[in-house]
Amino acid sequence: MNLTNPKVSTMFFDQIITVTDHNVTWEKIQNYLHNLYGEATYNSWLSSLRFISNRNGEVLLSVPTRFIKEWITVHYMEKILSLWQSEDQSVCSIDIQLIEERNSNSNTILKNREENNHNLGSPLDTRFTFDNFVVGKSNELAFTAAKRVAESIDPISGSNPLFLYGGVGLGKTHLMHAIAWDIVNSPSAKRKVVYLSAEKFMYQYITALRSKDIMLFKEQFRSVDVLMVDDVQFISGKDSTQEEFFHTFNALIDQNKQLVISADRSPSDLDGVEERIKSRLGWGLVADINETTFELRLGILQAKVERMNMYVPKDVLEFLARNIKSNIRELEGALNKVAHTSLIGRSMTVESASETLIDLLRSNHRSITIEEIQKKIAEFFNIKIADMQSNRRLRSLARPRQIAMYFAKKFTQKSLPDIGRNFGGRDHATVIHAVKQVENFIRTDPKFADEINRLKKMFK
Image (cartoon, rainbow, N blue to C red; front, side, top):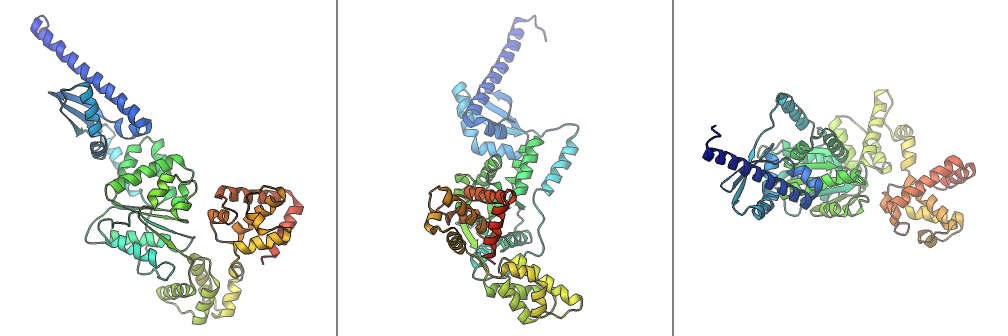
């Protein structure tokens, strides 16, 4: 270029100044966006934006992935254009083009992404289908809701999310796997289904943070058609995981994707979980799975015997159904134990079953209630039940109250929030503190330990 020509020289430097001006404008807009949305949102969605050009008021930006492009276009484009026009009124439009990240390790990156996609969820258990789920009054609503979600191509109004809750071993995980199997095997529509525990969701999120691959994490989880998260109570107290779960939840709902969530308690009882998350978990259909009835337990045993193609006398099945009331896992485990006795040449009778399961039967012999515990502890310490449930903090009341909470945790299937509510509306943290206090005194004070042992005998 001939820089001695004044006209050419002026044009050359005008172009440099113009490009520099555009870059300065872009830097200002980046600062505006950072201040407006905060560091977390900016780093997650907007930091990868790159300025390419501004030609006749048509601004061109770039991002590395299609997912980020679509997200910015829907959620931030209008604001970016407004900010740019406030700096330069000649700007009339903004477009974003996709520029894939390329480097010498591109094949390795692609391989890693494929592996991450494969490992995103947990494997499905082939035993857990709708066909071998035994339905009774205690789980009928949950079963019906799960079938509707599985059979519908698009989320059903009022059923998104589907929130299943109930005690351990009552069938929540079975229903979630059944939903996933139905969708995966459906010939009518191919939908991407991801099932995983809340613990694995947290683990994957932390791994993505450490490896600085958070955008891939977001893209993977927010591009599924059906997301199923088991035991969501696990994110209690995990602030950063809750933040990411909240945004993932919103992103999928906005895209009209289906969510299925399970927990051991209702959304409102999820202590340690942010109110905004609890509110959203209750948006759709909340279905509880109650404790099993005798008829349901007998039906489960009969179905399992049929699947195993084995013979177990009817009176033995009824004996198990009548005495193993805790949960379905223990019930099926008891059946397996009894069935094993026939393999070693013993006849299957009620008597032999009773001998084989003596320890399990002892723990299931009768159900101790919180009311019974409160009554016996109050009598032992010569105090009123009303005082135990009150907010009074006298030492003469505090210690018996802690012991009663300890036994409620030990001898009942109630959740910590349920126990707290039975002691004057106390929260789960108070119950945890009471249990730890009693356990500590048992270890350090022999006289206290003897007292606890005497009290235990009252519940035998």
